[in-house]
Length: 370
Ligand SMILES: Nc1ncnc2c1ncn2[C@@H]1O[C@H](COP(=O)(O)OP(=O)(O)OP(=O)(O)O)[C@@H](O)[C@H]1O
Ligand code: SF4
Ligand SMILES: [Mg+2]
Figure (cartoon, helix red, strand yellow):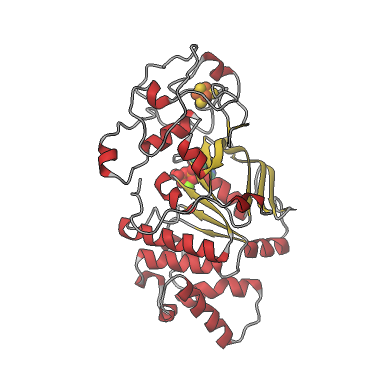
C-alpha cells in the first residue's frame, strides 16, 4: 500500500450542492461475469456533476472491472450503465465514438498505456483525431501545448517519446490525453499506485486541482484509503463484486459501519507516526474468497469477526442508515452496530471515531485472528 500524500491540502468537505447536481453516471445492478468469474455482481451507483467518488476495496474485489464497464472496454453481462440519462450499456460503433469523448480513463501504469512508438504530442492529439476534429496544424499544436501546460509539463515535451520521460511525467501525459476530449466523466484507475512514492502526491494533487478547475465527475479507483482524503467527496466500498457500504467521505471516515469498511480503515496507513505506532492493525486473515464461488449469504461472512449464523444464510441488502447505505445484518436502523476493532481487542483506528460498539449478544467471534 502506498503512503499518505505529504503535499497539498485534503479536499474540503463536499459542499451540499454537489449532491444536488444532475446525475452524470448511473450504474444499475451492473454485472460483469468472465465465464464463471463473477467479477462484478450487482453494483448500483450514481455520480453527479463535479463529484468524485472513490471506489475502494482490496485487490480482486472488482473495482477495475466496474471502471472497464463504464468506459465500455468490456460489455457488461447484465444491468445498465447510463451517462447523463442515456443508456450506454450496449453501443454501436458510432455511438462508441461519442462515448469515448464523454468518458476517459487513466490507467495505473502509464508505461503500459502509452504507445512507445508515438511522440507525446501525437499521443495527446490522438483523441482530437479520433473525434474527427478538423484542426489546422497550428491549432492542433496549440491544443497539445495547452494540454501539456495544464498538467504542468513544458510544451517541448511534445517532441519526446514516452520512454524518455519519468513515470510521473508519463502519467501527466496520460492525464493530459484523457482530458483532451473534455470528458464529462473521468475514470482514474489507481492513477498513482505504479509511481514512485515521491511523485505520487504531486500527481494526486494535480488530479485534484484539475478536477476542481474543470469540474468533471470522477470515479477514483483505489485500494489506498489515505489517497481518498485528497480527492473524493464520496466513498463506495466494494467486496467480492458487490458494494457493501457507501456514503460521503466524512460519514464513512467518521462512522464506518460495515465490518469490512472498518477493517479497511484500520489497515490504512496514518500520517501521524505516533498514532501509527500506537495502533494494532486489524487483519482480515484469510485471502479474498474466489469470485467463481462466492460465499453464501453475506459474502464477507467467512472473514467477518462478528458474523452470526444468519450471515451465512441470508444476503444482507444495502439500506439507508444515517448518512450512508450499508449491507450488514448487524447494523441497526439507528446506525449502531458491531465494531470489529473493539470486537477483535484492538485499539481504535486513528482519525476515526466509530459509533459505540453494540454487537448483539448473538454475535460470536470466529476464533480466527481478526
Ligand atoms: N479478463 C478477465 N478474465 C477473467 N477474470 C478476470 C478478468 N479480469 C478480471 N478478472 C477477475 O475478476 C475479479 C475482479 O478483478 P478486478 O481487476 O476488477 O479487481 P480489482 O478490484 O481492480 O483488483 P486490483 O486492486 O488488483 O486492481 C478478479 O477475480 C479477477 O481475477
Ligand atoms: S456481521 Fe454478518 S452481515 Fe454483517 S458484515 Fe459480518 S458477516 Fe456480513
Ligand atoms: Mg484494478
